[in-house]
Image (cartoon, rainbow, N blue to C red; front, side, top):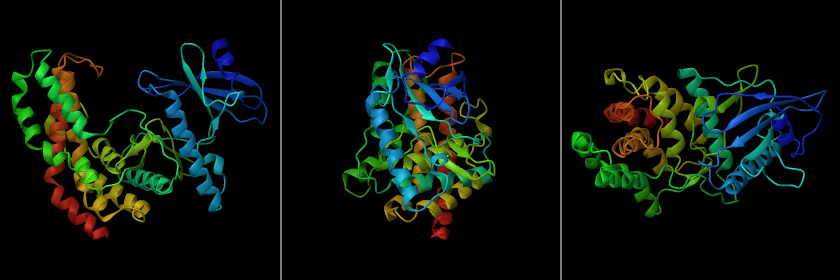
Length: 359
């Protein structure tokens, strides 16, 4: 605790620190709740995983730009309790966005009191997520400041396919021959699934400021169940709106698990799709183009396809990227995402019909 107290002392916080304790169950960064005495606010101290986010200065500039723009929007429209509806980043005493102790990078933000997050996925929580992420994109749709990629080519399908092609060519683990059927299916759809990059090059699909990690537990709610704000902004970067729409459905609308051994349990939950899509369009429709709306069913299929490609590439490389719990774990993940992708494509006509009904 002494080490953590010494670290927090470098930030321009108010009050006297009483306790510092681990907080949450984040998979990337380590978080600590800093509780103060008296009426001073509490804070979150985070150790940034600079192995994943290698440009920490860019990371923090992105978050600062995004939160400042949202704060201006909320203030301009007369929103109440703004400090609970957008993250407040705390600089160091010398005005820097983060503190480097010679080994680790640290940042601090104000803790949002009386807030909760949820893990449960059902139509109700999916509707909340659609409203929250659609509104998040809407508020940032006119942000003048340019932000950069915190993970280069993160949701670029052409890049992910190139990684797969490299893995096939190298065949480091000698597994390519046994995976020919799935590889052939992936290759048959490669051109269609790279549609986003093609549309962008043709000037028909804009890049926008997106969250790129749209899970329901990245939304904070108040004590009455009302959405407060979107959090975990490390992956906020320029992308197609498909990133936020499609990646949410990939996890939330899967009737099975991401690594389900029984692929018969894996399918696409249309009730989750309808709840999320209706709310998302309610929030985001004011700025979306016809091309973006038209390709929402494509976005729903894109992300299980992309994750299937990524798991397969790692399996062929000998499991060098994703943590595995048993030798065939990445193979199981590949097959589960493959099954989800097939189920999504089987529902394409129904998705298009539903979206047209909303318009």
